[in-house]
Image: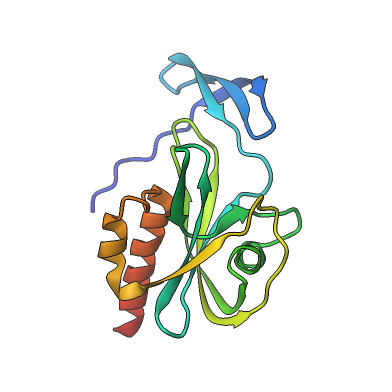
Length: 188
């Protein structure tokens, strides 16, 4: 693959917070590009230490999904467990905590598969996708408003899962494909 020359990043000449809610901070960036062009961009600024999404595989080669209410689309949705990395936690500690809170299992083996961005032109948020194996039962209290339904789903049927109407979150779809590819490479 031919890669083009990496350009010099634009100079951020000014940052201003233009709006804040309980969940989001909108930041305005004044940029000067290496060719002299100036632009103002807005982005949702990430807070904290990032987020994790966990692909937990049990002994029956099932991925542990959760069904919970998704306010953005006003529906109950199947997805992978996920949450914020708390201050002082590393990625695998956060993944294991979220797994215990949302699924009721911990993992002896945790592998970070990839760090992804969601919409890098507008969001500074990043999420670490973590594969969790060698599961054991352990439940921690979480911050969910209602009990989360845990739905084990055969890993061999990922394509059927992705075709479901109630499994539409792009991050979860990417996580499953990355997991399938990782496990196939591991076999070879």
